[in-house]
Length: 112
Length: 242
Image (cartoon, rainbow over all chains, first blue to last red; front, side, top):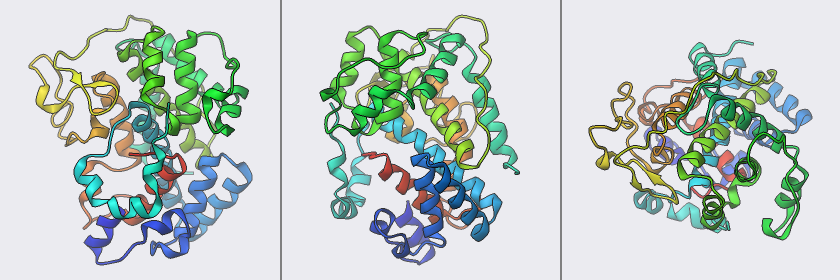
């Protein structure tokens, strides 16, 4: 959907930057938001306090709340996907094959 | 701190509903799942397994609250602490140990809701909520008549297999939500109430399918690209294949 957002708004976003270097994503306030997500998922209180303050400072409190909601919602839904073993739909797999290969994402199905 | 009203209401409704009798678990059972989900974060066995290359290489016993059966504890703890490495063989072992497929799906929905609500409140700098109040009553124990093999390990109610006796989970029930039947929508559909429960909350935390595809308008205080970047980041951090 990040790619689709870029196509719809005639902007280029880097998916690899989402995993590697926030500064290269092309998304506004990417560094602050990614630091917020990382600290929230890691449940690191000190880092989270700092990251939350940075997001509020740059984007405002309402954006911090909405960012927290997205992070939290995906922290839940990834468990639903992983715990039911659902595969990616063929069309989505085809559309995302290039960056999945670039990021080596298909290594992630390793459970037992 | 002001939480968007629709978001606050959706989360409050979802949290209260956890305490109600479900389809395959009682209200007290569901509250016990909430407590065990929180407790799993401090389980030494789960922490050691999470650090190991193979979770099976680390033996021992979970640190438990002692309310749920061991098979349910194993499901809750692994989903809470190591979901990115779950596999079908692990799931089949749970079934062999007596957990039903329907119980597993409902348990999963509760764990996911607890993770989502607790993560939100922690991220936003808010205090965690107390456990939901357990409501007396019996589970309804109704399996969708049209349920069959799903896209993953578990059975599901696909839109095309729905019978007249089954709720319309994808378009009409209980309103025009346009859940279009992607595999992620189908994942919880074996227990329709759990699916509705989860998605009604998630769509207020993230966006509905229609909002997600409406790039001409922003529905949140963060933009579509910011939302999708965050979603991708969290999926990667959690090693989510989907």
